Image 1 (cartoon, rainbow over the protein chains, first blue to last red):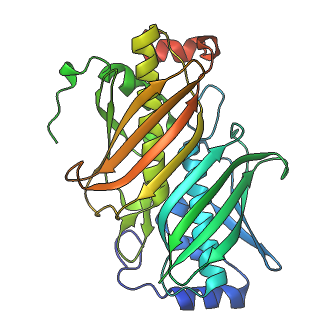
Image 2 (image 1 turned 180 degrees about the vertical axis):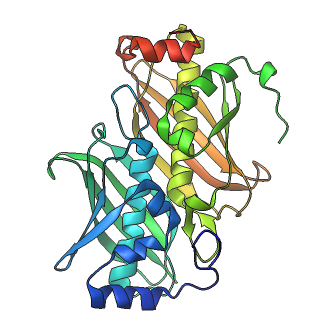
Image 3 (image 1 turned 30 degrees about the vertical axis):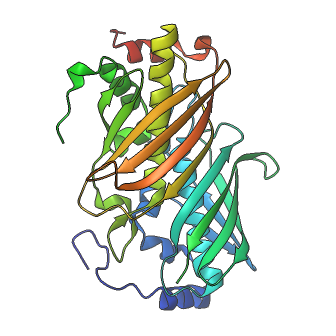
Length: 153
Length: 165
């Protein structure tokens, strides 16, 4: 372990995912990613579905007058959700690398808990396409929708 | 990195704007230059932002936040220069293409420009780089909705103009 508590060297993604599956606890996958801790995101599993959560946190505010979450944080949360979705459902040996990320903001993200769910639209041999939806109080009232490509090897 | 903020008249305005955004203070984003044409923002390396623990590479989400902030600031500067008014434009959409990972232990620079300002939408493009803008980490295009200057609250307007409250 380095001084930051981040394990140095190789991270065995396959073992981590396997362990998470056995314990039915995916939160410790996030503990290995400092940025996930930085924004304070969490994950829960309901049967075959993963739901990602971003609890309301003052540090994630952009515009302080509304107050609204910074759009970049919402994007980062959604991107990390997609990475985790791929790791869990793909038996990845490495953390997928983002190739492109395109986000549409549909409503202001208020200082409230946010949620995300992902759909792997297509998984090829080298690239996966994922769509991500993000909402706050009502799943039907999305605050943002995104699609992204990831390199998987 | 050597810059000359005196040469770029909107640097102070852009700096005050970015400092108002809580997440940007947490990321320690610093405005190096701003003019009616462009904005240049520095993101210092920080281990807390790592997205790939094996390599120490920062998370793509941080680059997205840098691009969103730089692009949004470019819109603020562009509108201020053209209309002498303050508008806060929410992001409509943003697309980021990642060319290569950001090298650990080095700052990332975000260069953004608002290349078209229409009556209701502002269009932006941005590049993130480390050593040279010709060797980019990421490229972004975005669009921002223009809203009335009246939507900017008085405390926020004062903070942006650097007036004592």
